[in-house]
Amino acid sequence: MILTWLGKWFQHKKRIWLPLLLCLLSLTLLMMNQSPPLTRATWIWDAKQIIAQPEEIVAFAKEHQINRIYLQIKPTDISPQAYRSFIGMASRAGIDVEALSGDPHWVFTRNRDSIANLIAWVKAFNNRAPENERFQGIHVDIEPYLLPDWEKDRENIVRQWMENIEYLVAETKKDTDLLVSADLPFWIDSVQVPGDTEKLSNWMLQRLDSITLMAYRNYADGPNGILSIVQRIVDDANEQKQRSVIVGVNILNSGEGPHVSFHERGTEEMANQLAILHRALSRHPAFGGSAVHDYESWKKVSQREE
View 1 (cartoon, rainbow, N blue to C red):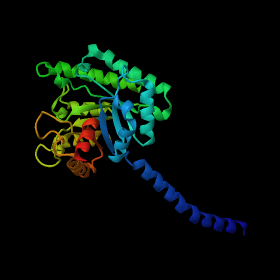
View 2: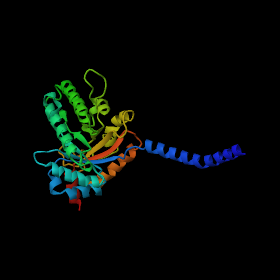
View 3: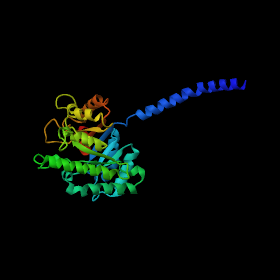
């Protein structure tokens, strides 16, 4: 009698708890498989703006769904308190802030002290700041192809660039969870690792948390459009790292030709083209979002349109 009763009790409880357990398991798997949200970023190169107009910057970011800001580090001009205050304000609005710096000459190993100083400054800053007032990562803009010797000494320059990127990542990751990312030209996949057939773009993707491609075109579709110039790198990255490729566009007034900036086409057309970009690339695991260069130019064009 007792055994029969226990058997019925177990079967009753099983009918109740099994569906609940299956539901919890499904929810857990769903959460594990969810990708991080897409990035919508912008650059702030004049860090003095965070003193003059912090509320305006954050309001603009919220209006345009910006969730990441690459903010220039200028310790000689901006106090740690000013950085902390702005980061805290941005954080409360759901915006991550990354420390931005770089120079073409940072490619040379002889100038590694500049990289070391940036890392040390960011780490010291974060160690003294409350959690919601810390930088979330380090973002570098080195662009060595702007150097006069790029064409004639490319292999040597690329080799030093790689060494400094490895140093940047290794030193930044010591005792921190800081993200490390970099601006790269859309044609970086045409450059090979010296002495190898590996694409430099793949080499960078394997080491950096993300790359922001400077895909400076003012139309998404068609020959030489944004999609066509980033597609190869996105395809390569799909097998490597989720949300690792952020596609950057330009709204800065540029003298490089009529097709590289949205300065004349305006913010509405830029939004339309970015929407096309997001729809086309959203199924790609590597696609991490978009970035607009830069905040100051974006704001000026927006004001012009009012």
